[in-house]
Image (tube, rainbow, N blue to C red):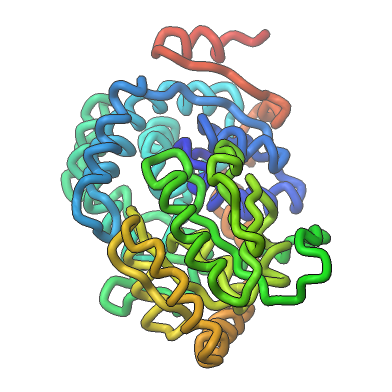
Length: 414
């Protein structure tokens, strides 16, 4: 399995990785940065891919954040994911394929080195959607020209329309209810519901306080950018003015102490399993990231959304259209509006009813474990023709910085 460096991106793969290992298969995840950390925490073997220098990536992300909000920022897809990231990651993905000899490559939508590696090695490929069909459509269109240039660099036949990129099985954990009927996404999309995660005991951070709990999270990317900590603090203050308890989580890499002294009703933590919080939360105030929205709706919990970038505006519009939440527009400057949005969600029971209907539709989907049979069907012809077994998932961290070093590190049997 391959992913870009975002923890949210590799997170889309992890339910499928767990399903494969649960069925007796082996999984190796090739990624970098926060994605590699998340994969290791989940217990999977990791090859850490090379990353483009910060000088090549940071200014592209900074410029993208200044652009008007959209469904997915096409510039990031074009110049980063299908551009510098794919170029730097491809040697490592190919080297891992040569050494580990996979039966199938599974990649999240924005990791394009896998698209090239699968064709170069003849290994079947499956895409895992990181969002709704509209998001997938924008990603594929935005990546077209850049990915075609990568194809030329790799010596592959050019595919200006990107038809070969699209026509593969696509796995999705996004419920059909979130889809825009005008943009349903790839036709070969197979939808699944995630496995029920074991629920842990959520600590009592407010002894004796029985007020309802609101969870505030802006995902894994925002804490590393300009919205932290000012936007968080504005949202916390607005929510704490309500008759609720407020749990704000800032991710593993940010310091909760940066929020300063908090109102008595609020507590700040780095990271907690969201499934634990959702057993108690009456509402989620968030950025509209796909993972957070899917988890909240799966639990039947309504949302207040402050979309910041990427696919978040689209998700916010779809949640609003479902009647399962309230969107606040205006990006970071509107963070204080989350207080009024949560107040509306709590005052009107129709929002929870809509979220519970979405949860019911998600429960009706086939379990993620059934995706294993699709993978098995794809790789069976390849398995029967192989003359040696792969090196197992104990292969861990390999740093890559250049094409030559990748080849020498992984081609030799040591």
